[in-house]
Length: 253
Ligand code: ZN
Image (cartoon, rainbow, N blue to C red):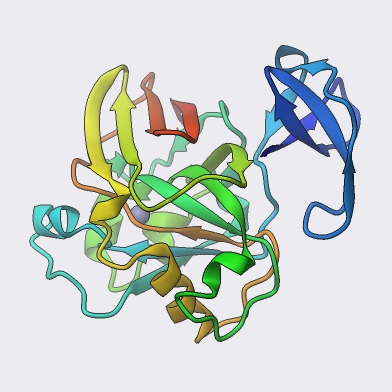
């Protein structure tokens, strides 16, 4: 099932499910008991919103060896974690705003895990029972500021630096799917999720040994090689085979 969050006209946001270009409302709790209404709303009549409201966004650095190498960084022995604030979230199609403090804002196309149940001390094998599904993310990064700072809160945390969506796919298999990132149609990044250093199960085990994960929390699983600059007027598209495509324009703040 593909889960969306959407608005029709100015009605309050609702969760829905997608069926052949139509949305049906989901009544109840997407993390618990719910009922699916018949899908009758054309996708074009709805405004798609970021499909989850996380309490936190945990990100993994250098989880593809080729990306670590392009920054002359070592391949990590344990996952490198950092966080993005929920205030950085934007909807699919909303603009990424280039802040005046940075001269080098870059895209990072990533597979994103959406947590389905409160999780602590997971095992790699048991982690999948705590996943609601998967979505597509762009871990937008002010690379020049990242290089200046010992930690990355500033470089990763600007408003609009966390586009994700357009939906959550509950049936997606993350073991071997191609991720691509294009800017103005030009290919920048391409790799398979099979090339991750730490797979989804081991990442969730590691992260949940540190902090409790809540329903709706996001895990950005790292970006492949090929990250590069975004400029005013660009359109950046992150696509994951079998999952969909996330597209955002780029504007000056
Ligand atoms: Zn990243």
